[in-house]
Structures are given as structure tokens and as C-alpha cells.
Length: 308
Image (cartoon, rainbow, N blue to C red; front, side, top):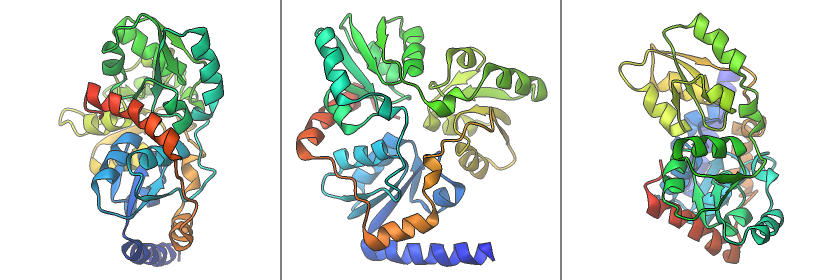
């Protein structure tokens, strides 16, 4: 019965999508059924860049709030829908524009680098953005002595170990990646001795130390396609396992922790996508003043190097 229901739902969604001239973007952490109907599956910035190149009038962003904002920053003429307005990012909420302004007054000479996992207001108060894929390159390009990095202390710590740069780290973190523990990795390495351990740089340092590779979600997907890789222990949100198995049949992918689930990412369902397209709500629109300032930080990042 469920199969029929899903098929009917998908048919309705696709017919409405055509009528609205919409494009569907799904983050790698979304539910499998949502990834399966998307035009593009990827990481947040990659998806917004794809959206900017399409001639769609409507972007249905199946991700979290800051991602829909990034799409609005890059595609101001398109309507951006986020099928569940409660799909936020706890880490992005750990820094506000007001608190960042206060910190900037304390350190007036600091270059402010913000991880893409932050609100449009925070991006607007930053000098340059970065993603987990290009963070090292962005930080290496800066010649200022003082660098203030927001909001993820673990990504910031990882970058400092790769670049040797001294950085002031905001005390934010991703609760989902924090659930991946070093003992999980150690146990799985014993169970799957042939497997490569690949983790996201949002993981804590003790986990990163045990990894063979530290990669963004896009990097993890590319790494999995390598011919010499047959088994992987994957240290990031478990939604990515759906895509990895789908793109690499015959290979084994083991989540580093079954606890690494982002509840906000899982809020978006087929029903909510249909409702969102029918009602053309909730819309995410970044006010023009903030959008232009935030876009400067994103554009500066894109100039430094192609974001992956």
C-alpha cells in the first residue's frame, strides 16, 4: 500500500513541479525518498550554484534554513521554498549577527571567516565565507594575523591544524557530528579492517585523528567512486549512506554511528513538498540590504577558488 501511496504522491508532485517550473534541490542528508525525486543532490553551496544556472522560476530547497537563504542570496529573482520552515540548523543558530558585531568590536583587526552553515545576517557581517571543502584554501589565502572563525569550533580546529594559522574559534558545533565518538570508529575498524575511514571535518578532533580521509559531503561522494575503494566507514550524517549505496552498488558503506541523525534534515517529506508547491509557501527571501552584503562574502570565497 505504501508503495502505491508514494507513487501517487510522486506523480502529483512531479506534475505540479512542471506547472510551477520548479527545480528540486536535496541535500545529501535528506530522506532517501526526497533525494530520489530531486533534480540535484549535493552539498549546500553546490546546490545553490546549480540553482543559479537553471531557468526555473521556483527553487524547492530540501535542506535547512541557511541553505534556502544561500539560494536566495545567489538567485534573488527566483522564489525559494523551504517545505518545512522549522528545518533549521542548530549550529547556525549558535552565532547571531548581534553577538558577532560585539566580537568584531573587541578584535577590530580580525578577518571574519564564516562557515556557509550560518545565517544570511551572519554572512553579511563576515569578510569571507567558506565551505568544508574549500575552508583550508580560503584560510591559506588570508594574510591577516587575526582570524575569527564562526560558528564551528571543530571545523576551525581542523583548518588550523592543516594551515598552521592561529584562529579565534567561536564555540559552536554540530550536535549530529558530535554524536560520532572515537570508540565507534575504533570498534568498526576492528569489525571492517579493510574499510577506509572517511569523516567530515565537523567531527571532533579525536575522531578526525582516526580517519584515513577528512572530506566534505561532496568529497565523500567522489572518494566513494574510486575503483580501489570497496568498503567505507562513513563519519557524517547517515542520510548520505542512501546516495553512496545508490551510486556505488556492490560496495559496502557503514555509518560510523547510527546516532548521527540530524532531526531537522529529516523534517522534509514528500507530503510537505507537495503542500509547499500547492500553497507556494513557506518562502525564504533574504532582504536586499543583507543579501548584497552576504553575497560579497560568498563571492569573495568563489574568487579564492572554485568551491566544491
